[in-house]
Every structure is written in structure tokens, then in C-alpha cells.
Amino acid sequence: CLLAPDLSIIAAAQFRNHPQHFAEFEQWLRQQGISPLQSLLCMESTGIYGRPLAGWLVEQGWPLAIVNPRRIKGYAHSMGLRTKTDSVDARCIAHFAASHKPTPWSPPAEAMQRIRQLLVLREQLLALIAHVLERALSPFLSSSLADTLLLKLAKPRLSLGLPQANISAAVQSKVDHD
Image (cartoon, rainbow, N blue to C red; front, side, top):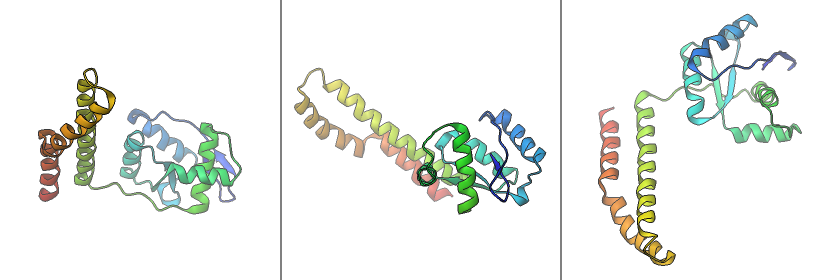
């Protein structure tokens, strides 16, 4: 959704969130007379779903603000918007950007991105270990006894176990190296 300085809608369109279609979005912006020097693009933070587009836009020189969805939702409620559709969301994000002028985003350094990935992997592995232990114990024990044993067995394994140690070592190595 593109807004004029008076906050009226200039144009709106939808594009697929796939790297093959990112250039179409940029071409559309330019066809509307929009250039990186006179604009601020804004999107909600969507985690891994928006990262490829965000990175691509910044690489192409477009200023991009990435905003917490809760801020956008709060802004929408303050404007009396209760409907949740893509077009309403796009308008709301555009109005939010125009009125709040959020700071453009800069992608984290490659090392920080890798560290985040390793930490996410570590948390996923720890959760998986706890889940496997719980499933292995539950058929044989009462719920309260299984919980007690799980705590006694899982905590030492999670704090001393190989997966965590290897992931922690990899994170530390990356931090030391970079």
C-alpha cells in the first residue's frame, strides 16, 4: 500500500513472498514513481518468513523499517480498525510508518545471524531431548513420578549432555572467531 503525503492511498498491490517475485515488487514501486531516496518501506516482523524479502530490499538500497506486530495491532486498535485482512493490514502498516516514521532496519552481521541460528537450534535440541525423555518414561510411570524422574534425569543430561555442550562450544567458537 502506497500513501501520498496527505495519507491518501496512491496504489496497492499484492506480491508473492518468494525470492523469484521480489524484483516484481521493486519494479511495481518504480512504476508508481517511488525510489529508495524518497521512501520508507515498512513491514511487520514475521521472523523467518520476512527475512529473505527484508534482506533483498536492503541489498537493493531500499530503506526498510521492520516493526513489531504488536505495535501495529495497537495502532490499528487506536484507529478503530477491527477487521483483519491483508489490505486493511497493508493500509494500517503504511499509516503507521507515515505517522511514526520508524527507524530503518539494518541486517545483523553474518556472525550474529549464525549465532542466533545456533542458539535456536540449541533450544530446539534441548526441547527435543526433554520430550523424548518424557515419552520414554511416561508409559511405565505415574505422571507425578515421571515428572520427578524427568527432572532428576533431564537436568544433569541437559546441563552436561553432548548436544548442548557441542552447540554451546560452537556458539562460543563463533563468538571468539568473529
